[in-house]
Length: 547
Image (cartoon, rainbow, N blue to C red; front, side, top):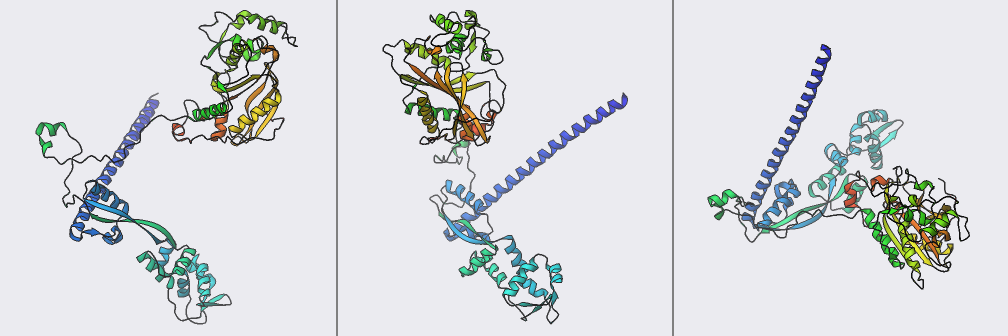
């Protein structure tokens, strides 16, 4: 027990020591950073003073690259000139020059000699020469390169496995050429530049320097300028004689941190515009809470359907029930229990109480049903093209492509002489306007549409077909109780807003698009969404999609 206490004390002391060590290390780094800042500030002040003194004596500086034998960092010179320019002490303009700098290999050759000369120097005079193995052991990798150039220049020849000299002495032309380029930044012979560049001994760089002249308020005195009016200045009266720095109204301020459009909003706006271009009107869909009647029953979804269970739907606790149902609820009850319009119904006892249960809407089709009921009261009936983009809620497991809350895009076309061909043609045009070109369709089942089609698009990130929408022709069992005439047909489709956005922006996990863990830099820096509205898929595939 006593041993355990000692061990705990030792661990605590070790942790305390580590904390103190890291704190001391951080303070030292801060101290060194401050020292470096003061050093650079001192250098900048000294450079400014030197520039002013030079101008006082010479009147101008033709090229700052010549100052201090070209050893000055022109970026530091620029900072010094900008500071002096802000006080109207100087005026300056940039001089752009292209020059050649030695590469690391070029610098080594200038210092030690070219590869070919070093090979020549290792070959002794006389008939014996040197073996290739001995040469390689002395010079390493450059032996092979140097041999090639030396052979080309006819400085050496091969006798058996040995190299012998063919001339008594050589001149290191390459080294001389590099020395000239080092000194002047160029060479008079363009063919030499071309050859040295080919050998990767030089690189072209753009160098910026400055020409400087006296400014309107030129002075060699660098008095400190005050940047703030302090309480002490006002109390002492020193502000009257203080040298204040003038305001620079042309200086660029810090960029404002305003709001940024989320990728979902950008894609939403583009989809919204696509609907408007096709002559659609937007439905009002602000009611997130619906009764089970509008969310399920009016859409011919049976009350025992799995989608109506707690694991798929969020039920409201307060208020838990709707106060009343629409007048035509008995028509809906009848078609559920007994059928009609060519259907035998579901053959179960329909419950009024179940229909009044309040839910977070699982789809915006609940709103579409109410709008269709309103359209049925218009005499004579007028064709309509309607859409909505709003939030829906599903009580399902969260994964890379599913969230409990997402956006549904829904479109409804009501009229006469509407067929499955109308639906496919519309989907072709609509997704073409979104820039989605690779589409596949799969027959599906929906309680309120027949025939029904699932829409799939190719996702480059997942490298597979991803379901992006559902569609179909609304059943008579849904439309007739809502009051629509027998000759009226309605096609509808729905898709999430998130999946097209993921496809457009190349996002492979929906949690990187929405949620509390998203990267805010992505929200700030995501590009403008421009959908290719001229795209259109011309061929459709009724394919069996691999799940």
